[in-house]
Length: 232
Length: 218
Image 1: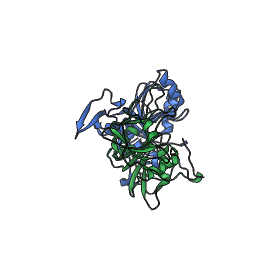
Image 2: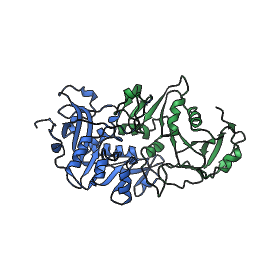
Image 3: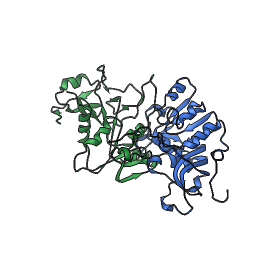
């Protein structure tokens, strides 16, 4: 590897240094735009006691649901975890800790984390259980909660196309949390469907500039559909 | 007769205005998209990062990378835009969405809403609901007026953990269209054939009944 070339040649190399007890941020919304091969590699590595930050937690047997199944997760920070039966079981048995976070607050926590902002005020959640223990302040006559930023030891991201410098674009709504997650990892690992030459992507259309990306790998994706809804 | 789900959607659709950006929650709110009046343009926001949500795709056009907030496969209309979750909630939290329609378990006379958590049952999460109710100026809650056991869902004070505080001003139930003003529900319209007395009996929170309460027509 030389200069700005972020390419690694194996999933093992992509997640080298991931250790027990670390915090991993994962992109994706439901099963859309999840870094499915990087998740599978975490399962293969058997890394334990992870804190996962992800809007959802996959489904039974796919996506982050695999890591739950394999008892690798101590804590989840998510906005919605309803698609997962095993999750319920581990939550009720006390095996798993869950910090439910409003979706927009979760997105902003990672955006802030990546942008060097330690905390921010938001009206979301004022007067609700998620305000418990949080500092509040009034601005212009309205109450706001102080929410702290999130950063991770690793960020795992699914992109569509990237060049070797780690400039990434996402496809359709598979973008979701991915560009935020990409900014907030100490080590950010991106897997993509397609590698293009340096200079091939229009610089003005890049979603995640390469400065945020530490490692890049090209993978094959199943892209499972959670809720196939059609008109015919 | 109480309103059907589709009639509720039709009634909500009468609140749409040309050029509105609208976020529709899961369930009855989603049906509102079927009743956008002819000649009116509205753009649907899906909080996973899509402004300009279209119809469901044909089997041939299904794309795993194109979903809505309910994780259903969808299409995007011409003129749509796609963005990150942070951008999506900047629109929502920043008050840029003209109308939000969502369901609830309970609302109360202070405009509080409870819609995400029933203690003792599994908590699946609030998703984007807390951001939506905190950010929108114009929210319509759609819900049944009372539970199957006849217990009112329009209360003096919400009993369930809140989704948002003091943010609801308009409620459409299967029995009535109501507004919330100065610590009271105000009965604005009643469903066809539903008496004011029935609505009164099924509203636990303070209810003000104006002299004229029109009956909805469909």
